[in-house]
Length: 418
Ligand code: ADP
Ligand code: MG
Image (cartoon, rainbow, N blue to C red; front, top):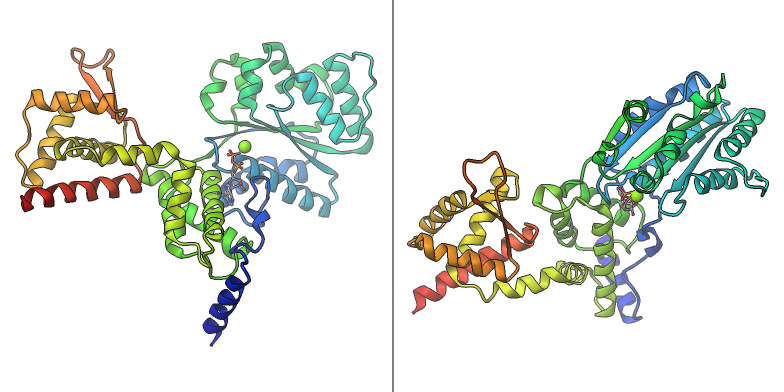
């Protein structure tokens, strides 16, 4: 009965030309959801690192580095942590303020300090104070009000790559300069790559590299949970309109374990676009077809590549399949020619096909390279002699695999029929 009612609503909505969305704003990149599936561990680690602010305030200045690729939830998780942690601090009688600063926007030490002051509602006189003086004003302000401050410097890679060493030094070692008793300023540095820190002075590194929290790319099933949370708990869509298979499809495209980037932002964007496409087609459901269309809009190269694949002949496809197998088996990107050839021979035999000879294989690889499907390079030192290393130029996704399998099957069938 209940199900029937739901369907009835769907049909009535559709007749009125309505939409699959309920609260589409929860799909905005800046929206902070109530839950952050699969980031509980990171929030726990942040809490453990910062617990002294609540348990033993003033005893030390805490610094944590967060590292992870784009879309792994670094920004949203630290903001959420800041929100919850200050709330808990408040309940325990600690005056705690959390500030989130984006170093893309505040590009210099001076602008960062001004932004801290601005967010604290602290007036800084307009007479060209030095960084030291400005920081002193901020510190005095915190001291007078007995406030503990956590500052997150997001996109900190950017600050490091553009700022003079003295400024970086100033920021991370502030207390050695100031010589204060009660520590009040604590930092979270967010970077995409730990290597962006490797060029720094040892003394700076020692200061910030004690606590590192890693944000790994999301797997397919993690992305599935994140998308489902937005759909079901946050009510981005009307109840029951998003087909589960569509969510699975999107999760599989971006899941790191399936060769995707593990980027939750792109997964959410694709879901949103799938909904818009469903609306524009007047569909009352968001189906896997909509998800596929959304994906090829978001990844236009992919649809071009998919078209190219249709023009390849059987053995060219087998070469790609061989490299894809290696990619999955070895977890790396570049493979020596000999390894590709062995795998190609294996794949061919499995399908009852006589493998082509070495020179022919070389010609296939040359052509696939011209089409932009493969990349080659010469091996560097460390390998005996120099050998050609081969890689796919396109990400190995479930979609790609499915397509290759299908194309190979079609070619084999065609052969039989002639
Ligand atoms: P990063 O800062 O690492 O590039 P963001 O924090 O901006 O990533 O996250 C990208 C998008 O994915 C945001 O819309 C964010 O809300 C969402 N997101 C990331 N991780 C999660 C998660 N664990 N649960 C829910 N949404 C998430
Ligand atoms: Mg971010």
